Length: 129
Image (cartoon, rainbow, N blue to C red; front, side):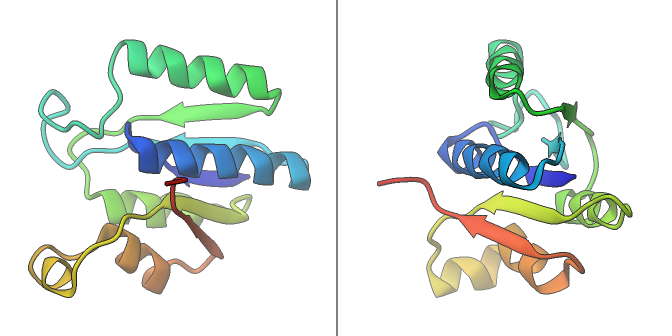
């Protein structure tokens, strides 16, 4: 199973696209995790309504077996790390964005924590410019 750390933005779209490709190459299924630490209504990266429908449509059209999980009120890093500990998890795919060194220092980086702490391979992708 390929785990995708999904966000409802262009970084999540890049991760989704690459995750679908990897699942096709490996003959594997997908687990798309779109988690939020806080209130789902205020987190712009948490997919809602039409965004979830669009996500489901893209996944259905891919022909790959998939599951979508949307946990609320969790630490996103911890949630993704926990999911990747499943025996059938092969790879974690995440979208990354450029951040300044000061931005990383002050705010931390979900991607950086995942890359450093995940026991499975992590594929970090950037959206096309």
